[in-house]
Length: 90
Image (cartoon, rainbow, N blue to C red; front, side, top):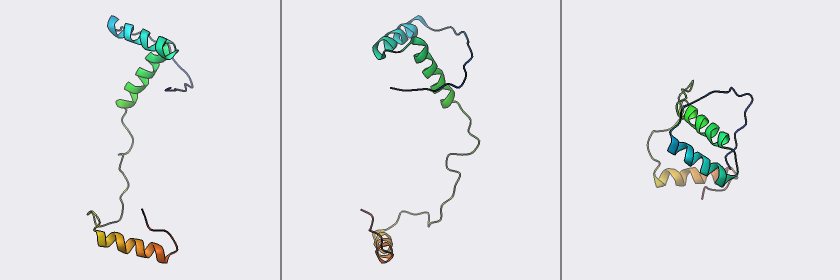
């Protein structure tokens, strides 16, 4: 079950389509949670989908050639790992 933890909440009023409310009512009954919980989950998902992040998802750079490794590259890496006492990648 999806679980949200709330530090604090603010009461608000919204207008909702009657068909959406019927779906929410049925989902709440089926899951054994309140309709308010279903609505809070929906608000949270909408907020996260529209959030602007402070930094890009892939902000770090990695060393490498920028190409897909060849079989030879993998074999060399496995040999180096074995010499260092580790197991080769599966």
